[in-house]
Length: 575
Image: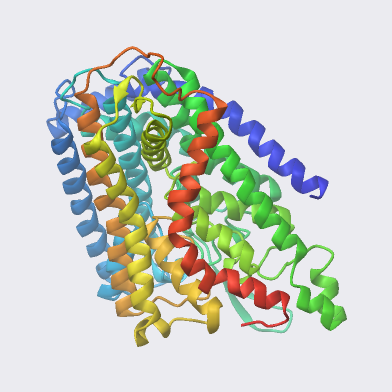
């Protein structure tokens, strides 16, 4: 691996390891209601919000009530955002005169931002007004991330409390996520991005005259404020169609590093928060280590494949093309500012962390590189994942790993001193199957119907990969695109929106049921028959279960798509 790319990855890992305990410890105090340095400013606002909304902060909820509150709150947000999108042509702050969206595109977009997916079947700078960007999309960037954080904290309480019927108050968790974590850090991050050249303006598009005498519209807008929460909230929706490849969103290699760190910081910090609640920090570091090893392994494979490039170009002796691709690898669809290293590190990060931001085009990656991007999503938001969602997914796999280990070695399946029984295993498997079923069912339907096949840019296995990636990104609440699949038509918009809603909210049902079931259990002291969950052995077991349960589910469709395409590329055939 070239030294600059190795340094980039190493710096990111070091910064992440330093941020996780600092931010994780702070968040643990926030959600526990302990005093923080922001209390003089945030506490009066928090108290005012509770009084205005008539919320009793001292009253906690059972898991079913917590879940119902989450669903109702997001349903209201969906309806409001849908109305803003279809009516934006009549609303103010619309200097580009963006028309109201069609109902199917508005449905897809509302589902996308409410579920923290931020998949966009429209061009950011042309499809929505400034008002929609700020009042609709940026607001949902905040509250969808805060919802994920609240549910993760509720699950952590369920796993760590003793014989309790309650797992917290959703309104309190949501408010604290916004006031103490997302909003203040977003303000700081927006100022840093502004200093680096990210724009922030309410001016209409600038019109410039090129050297050839043509007129070119240069898009403007309130970018820095949305860019900050887009990354910090692991949302990913680009203000511009080019997303984080656009110089107004991501102007320098330094902003590329800052944005990657912003995406990973809160998900990584949740592992430290978990250790704090469990009163055993090694429990949190085990999850962090498993996430980090999977992240680095994926980056290594993706980088190696993109660095090797396309062998057909070299064998063909196409001097101009080969000279552009061979020394630096496969540069098609990548920014020269970032190169293969900065592009693939960002690509690995964004698919692993459930963030739809991209600074390169996955459709132009080698088949093996595209496979890794898909695999990251299909594992189920567990390699750091979204805000809160990554910890949730990893804890589900941790319960499965403990149960499987207990069966294999004849030890009691326990996690944090609580017995893992049939009810928890049923709910855990339902959670795992929700994602896989949504991805495979919608992909299968789209691959044999005229409306599904119409959106492909390529035929053969690459076309299948384009369809598979779209529904993986939607169901996995990732939001990135293969860029070769045009989904802006009624049925792809509708099925994609349904996949997003299922991947977010149907998934939460078994998760919250597990939280309620585990909270009510007694804690028993560890014995000789208890399987240890704090060492290297458990890290290996956890990664093995993730790869077996997650990856092998999709192996048949990989064989029909990216695997056979990689083999055919080596044999000299492209699609």
